[in-house]
Amino acid sequence: MASIMGVWAFCQSLLQTVFPPELRFASLKYFHRLFSYFSSYCYYDITEIDGVNTNELYNAVQLYLSSSASISGTRLSLTRGLNSSSITFGLSNNDRLIDSYNGVAIEWEHIVTQRQAQTFSWRPLPEEKRGFTLRVKKKNKQLVLSSYLDYVMEKANELRRRSQDRLLYTNSRGGSLDSRGHPWESVPFKHPSTFDTLAMDPLKKSEIMDDLLDFANGESFYQKTGRAWKRGYLLYGPPGTGKSSMIAAMANFLGYDIYDLELTEVNTNSELRKLLMKTSSKSIIVIEDIDCSINLANRNKNGGATASAVGSGSRKTSYDVSSLPGSEDSGNTITLSGLLNFTDGLWSCCGSERIFVFTTNHIEKLDPALLRSGRMDMHINMSYCSFSALKILLKNYLGYDDIDLDKEILDQLEGVMDAAEMTPADISEILIKNRRDKRRATGELLEKLKAKAEKNRSKPMKKDGGGVDQEYGEEEQEKRALDSPKEGKDDDDEQENCGKFEGGIHENGDGKIH
Ligand SMILES: Nc1ncnc2c1ncn2[C@@H]1O[C@H](COP(=O)(O)OP(=O)(O)OP(=O)(O)O)[C@@H](O)[C@H]1O
Ligand SMILES: [Mg+2]
Image 1 (cartoon, rainbow, N blue to C red):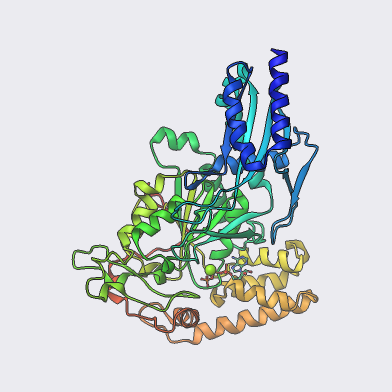
Image 2: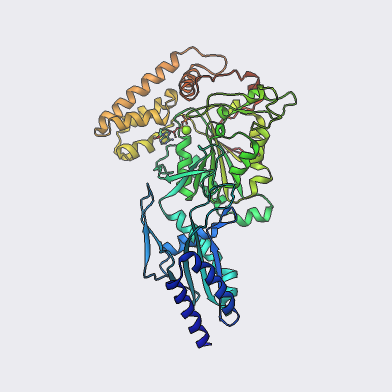
């Protein structure tokens, strides 16, 4: 047997020195077949692209090999991605190293060859053909198949989560795919918001954190109850109350990637489905300002689901496809039912451990279908800054603890906080501006709060909610104007259909209200 292995090794080294890489790859395969019968080893090829899809296992192996301490490579390739904070190292082209698992030696080789002239393909393929070959003794084959590869996947996921550079994906390219078949573009996600920096009622905060942890650790629960392993959060409240900051804090807390879904870039339900299929597990799928992304004014007579995307933000100019003759037939529209299928239809289960987060400034404008049980599991009201939230801001921005603050000032702040109805964003501005002088900061803050409370008191109360709401409307309209000049349609009839939510958090589905 030793002599057979010697011949095999000789042939391999001969091939590597004599043949060009593309021939080497093909010839190696041929010789491999010839020798496999006699060899005590078996081989597994893990190619980067499997047919037209990217092979997740390839990426996992690459990551695992780049960081595992249990491996000893003699020659590594170092890379640092654009905007990335860390250097990653991997196997050089056509180099190999030995990993050890449960006392078994596993050899990895990275094989890179030039792709031959492309025949017809629906999308351009990368110029290089890359793959890993795993070599293990035949007697340990079962170990590799039953647990080693799972271990590699798990380790790679963990490494990715632990690394600072989680990813923020966007679908700003519309429906088009990149050369690796991805509809999403990604950048490293480095938002500093955490649950520590988030100013909100501590009880509410810990409820949300517990809920997230229950979800992340709940694989067996979801399995046992036959539910898809996903959870939906609806964050609602005035601009500047921390909805986007909360999403960043959730991602940082769980170590998940974020998919920021720009609904106005999606033309059809099937495009929406494709985007969903290309999201990974352990991720948060976000639709911001859902009331602006889906135009609920276009529902059909049956209360059905003809909703069209409308422009917002850096988004397309408003359009209303359902008003174009025949546009529905041409399928050039996303519908509310398409969106609901996206979140809780069969397709929503094509991955696991995913969180959906919708945000809105106007929960009352949302279609009741979106709010129904089982859709968005938790409704979280991000409201004006409360006294307990203010204390968090004072600590974070000025380094104040409760005991550091003058009791009299604290009492005054507490007395005026609720009536002032100022957002954490407004308060943060005042604190940032005066952060070098704590006394001045609290002084100016108190002044502004009192003035705002006074202003609110003197405003004439309107039937539908009072003066404060009107101002919140103005602020929000400003935001909308920036987003889309054509917007601002009348949604009154929609509001009649919608339930009103008060208080902090509502857990949906089991009827509990927190
Ligand atoms: N609850 C909060 N805790 C800490 N900082 C906050 C909070 N709310 C707002 N801020 C600050 O204000 C800024 C704007 O907040 P954010 O973008 O999260 O608000 P939003 O609710 O998403 O607003 P919009 O409805 O306009 O999207 C943030 O950068 C953050 O610094
Ligand atoms: Mg926001």
